[in-house]
Image (cartoon, rainbow, N blue to C red; front, top):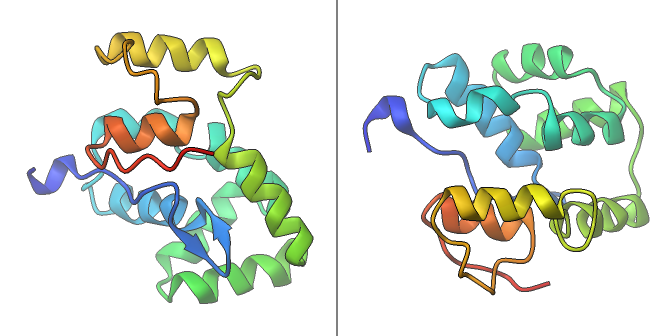
Length: 146
């Protein structure tokens, strides 16, 4: 894979127990360095990125600015806690359960079916969620059944 076609980290990546957050930061960094595969540009700051920022109560443009200033994922997560809302263990649990089940008998189920069909993997009965789809579509195929 060339430098310009890199895919982001797994949605199962976590910081301080919170799933997806490192993936969002990875997409920000790769996009700024012109290394993010074009398929991911349209979801920057929207979709799950937008939901994650809303849950943290931080604006996506502010998160982009802070991320591109450098620092570790942990430090950026701390910044979110200081500038958005402080998450406790239950908040992280609720986010994780929500995020990892998107597409499983919910409003995104039809979209998931479409993505599977478009990718030629409609037959994959083991893909139940958007996280599952991302893992397979991005070549990790390490599905973690919910």
